[in-house]
Image 1 (cartoon, rainbow, N blue to C red):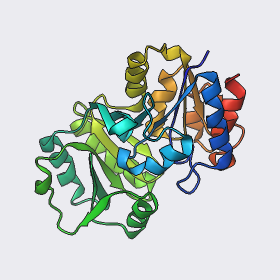
Image 2: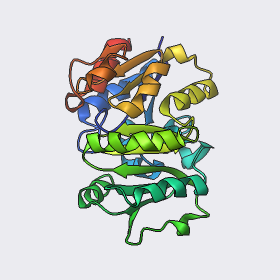
Image 3: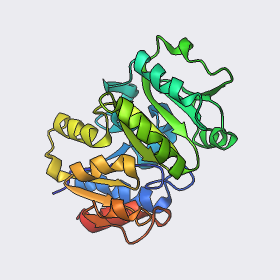
Image 4: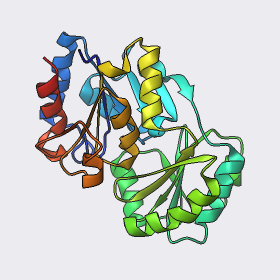
Length: 270
């Protein structure tokens, strides 16, 4: 019997940065079945308050969120941090310096803010739409973040072939220290080594005394693969690429825009 459902947000649960009504109704039905719905996202916790309201877990005790691809695990009530696992400043700066001469927009996420360097206007608008707390920094210098808790760094470009190309040298140099993944067809994401959604859902399942086999993980992109492989039932939405579909136990018949999460709940939660 499934007890926990972990869901990615962008291109999985959300449409235009909101939870569509069909998904909201399906998630609400879980309360009578003693099943928890937990978001597992690359976003910061301070970017998802409105989404948590829409799924009914905002500021609730015994309700949880996974953020920064697993770098942060929070109990939603009073934003209680259960675990934070971020990048050291020195390692973050090494990655940051690599981005200076690349054709990318660089984003640094701390616990409280997203800092944007080499700003892409499209990305700035995306952060506005996501209701993110962000600042555009004109000078390519991150020394002012030396005393901040750094969750992750992203290189953004709406050209996945380019991001995959530049990732080769980065992985060769930093593979022992950094976890690399891709998301939203625009990001190369860099977390501390060992940080990923799969490890995070396992940690939270253990924390809640739930067998990992009694969990479902739903996603769409490469940063979701680890949790889809770790969960008892790994699900991807129909718009996922074929290589991701091949790794999943179930592929939804509809895309995220047609409430793929609701399809999973209605099919697998009785």
